[in-house]
Image (cartoon, rainbow, N blue to C red; front, side):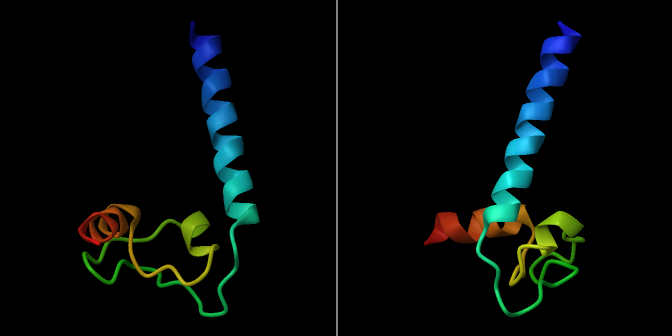
Length: 65
């Protein structure tokens, strides 16, 4: 059972890394901290470029639109 979970996690992680690698790059740098809540933005998320919010705050913003 643990092997199945490990494989599923590996597949999910590989998928996330592919999405980040293939995401459009923005010319402006990302913020190291969320502009709304001040939490650190993970380094891999910052690599996308143009990121100003943590994923939770970004989700809240998008739900309001």
